[in-house]
Image (cartoon, rainbow, N blue to C red):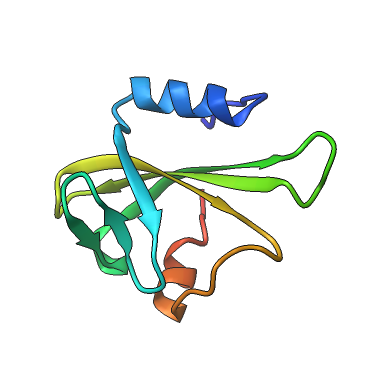
Length: 102
């Protein structure tokens, strides 16, 4: 069952306590873990859970939080990205992989 969080910071703190400790960055065709110098391709990770948050005063101030694990690299991490008009363009493989299906 998915937890419910009021804020992005609450979700991040709880997921970090659950072992999602790496910071992940979204690139056009992969996820990047700069701390470990990994480039994780779409077939090398799973989206474990996803949360969406909208800004209180501005609906354009929206973000999405992914808790991601990779058996290939033996890591768990968090990816925070904007969604909507400001989200970055991605390859079709990455778009498909980031479509969370509980």
